[in-house]
Length: 282
Image 1: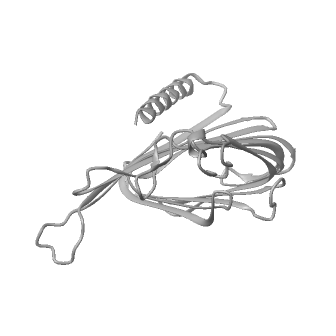
Image 2: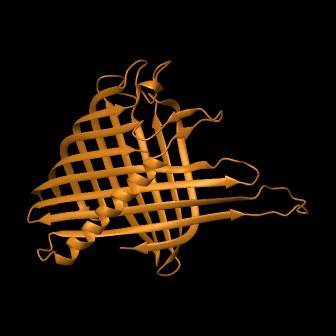
């Protein structure tokens, strides 16, 4: 929990600095926008409820922040994502983590022709809090695992809501603490190691659609093939975020993610978070 507090304080400082910069920025080279959401779910049953059920309460915090640069034929798009959620079941002494993400995506481009750009991208993903398995054994924590991807490529950008980047020479690094690989592999890192290096090709796509008034759907897809080990086994990471605004401050959010990475587990991983709560744009 200390890691979460430190991370949140750091991020609040960044946002405060950005807000000040926006106030004094006269060059108009940067455009910044973000969304803060605090969602709640709650179920309650009394002793006489014959249908059965267990009272519980859950909360999710989310920050989605874009800070983009454009100057002539040079563009630089950046997206920061933070999500954290907890749930508490009545009668259970411990809380359970329902969501935990910390991600930064950065994509720089210089116009080649028309809607095409020469590009360079960077992606970083990790988590803030410890993760436990069904037996309450710690299997992950802050910066374990941490994923880095970096590489040059070509970027097709139709608009701010539709783009695809292809990088045929992508370096990927997976980092975990050595105690997670002491007795076997973890997150694709071999037993006894603390990192795994891969080199391959990456395709990332972004598509946002306004389905109707006050309803938007954001889609992000990343595909990765490792040239050095079974390149036919493509890693897939798909994320969807649906925002349904009720008014300026209230909204319902749906977040869905599906991951396939056979180095971690030979199965599709999915998560889904739905909630109603406070929503604020900045």
